[in-house]
Image (cartoon, rainbow, N blue to C red; front, top):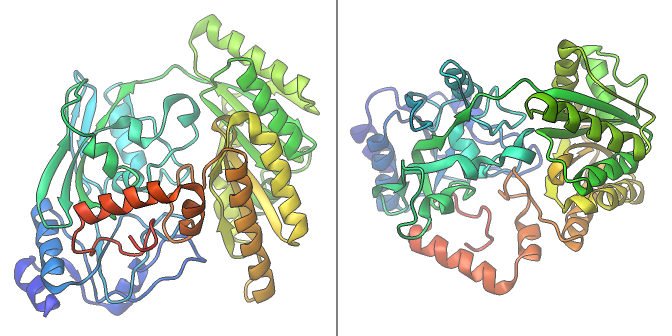
Length: 457
């Protein structure tokens, strides 16, 4: 039996024997995505242990699902029935930070904020900063190609992955990518792994690019009477040629939820808050902040100003990060993650509002507005089946609208289970077959996270 093989090959303590503990590993934060019951949960500590698990799964024909911290929002790390659930959370060593080459080598279980703090001690910075950064792991960030608040200027996880150590679907332990600043030898197989959601290999080590520590940021805040008006400000900033270091949108539903939870008083004066930041140094930063402020005012802000109080500015951005957990306190949340061209942001926000009305569904909006990555949050009441069905209909309409506007079904959360139909709508049949061919080549036994991302893959 598979479990007997694993007991022989893994050191003591690697298998989770307590069913109550194992239950905490079976799904991510996508509350609406289905999940099965795993045969066993394993928590390896080394790449060789991971290889042993994969090879055992190949021998027994048992599916393998890999997860990090479980903060995902698409069901990508959800257990399939009878699988081995492999948690990388114990592989949490920062192996190296090289200030000369500006890179770090880390285990997949290293928490994003822990890496950022360790880099800061050496005057370095790891830019990708998802809202889940205090809890999410680098391995999970790589698996979903996570983004974050500053990615409008600095890019997403893929832009910082130099190399990977991976166990393939055939049980081979391989190194992909490089440590050098440049390198174009062969296909970009490391890049292929980023965003593959555990369907092409199990990541056991990550080499990431670092940047020098930034200058302090200037913050511009604006209040707007509608999400569409705030969307016009986003489009105006893009048209002005500005590249803010962050540009975030929070609507009245999110503000009210944060206020109810944390009593921050943000929903008293604004229906929508738009938060912009610039980290350009010296006079250039001051000028960029002034131009951003002008864009806010010209787009119809009811109030806008450059913050002179860093504590106040940080509190506003804290509210942005708190929005999702605050809304979860109101009821089950179905989270969208569409991305559209910046010029289409006002129209996309208007379509989201129409979907909310059409399907009688409460939809709150937070967004990495500067890069067109919108996160409509569809909220229902526990046990209300009819409301759940209406929300799911709105969810599919929003995906269709994003594609219609030249966008994509996911900007950073991944496809997982919730977006498979949307991906099939977005891609042509020829491109879908290319995806399936890659999956078959790298996972010929079909054991790695089956049923995720590509239906039938």
